[in-house]
Length: 308
Image (cartoon, rainbow, N blue to C red; front, side, top):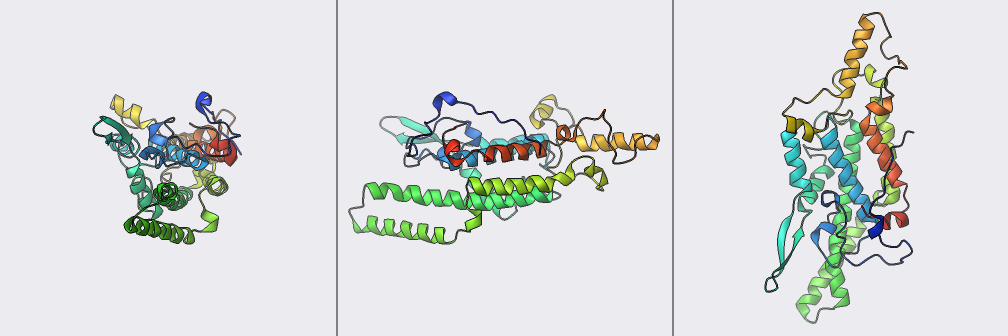
């Protein structure tokens, strides 16, 4: 299996791996677009952990699928608008009106996207004609990650009341209601779909195996246009800047070259030549999934010690 290189950065700001407890400080380090939903909501009760890193990786993966592959069904301007709406979204929240202090809050539109992905109804990430392994991967990710995010919301709402118990009947009733919701939420969990390192490694490796049928020369045996999300396109942002028409996906170019060679009596359809670029150079989605699998091999303890 070909693996892409993965670079770990920001070593000067990572927490120590031998720390037994998760940090209680809000994580302000990382790329805003890819930070976990809870990390973006400026909650002092949130404890940053390995699951935040895993979630960030998944957001980066979805972003790259839209920007660098043929997955997104709209034009380049629409792709940019979608990514900005979901990944760049933030709002200014006043923390103390008298002290005139405020902070940036975000992540709400990521939750909306997850709720659509869970049902396979995100027209942006799950369009008609999407490669089946990717469709399955995104639906499973949406379902498991949304469950995980909702559980975190309940836990962080309950945590302050544990350290500072309510003193009135209304506060006690609210706490009991939240605790009951949390127990019901945990009871609905599917053991083999629990969001975490083992689960992510499993679903990514399954997606990698499923995407092998879209590698050259196997792709030449498929009829019609390549499925969405299976081939690379030129960077949509750069293409939009130049006002240029998007270039054809790499697989379509290869198909045209192969047809010309066949018509000239050259190589037979589906054969390879040492002069051609290796398939791994042509299949960026496979490389992205391989990078995901490689990243998922970081143990939970190591992942918790590395921030983006």
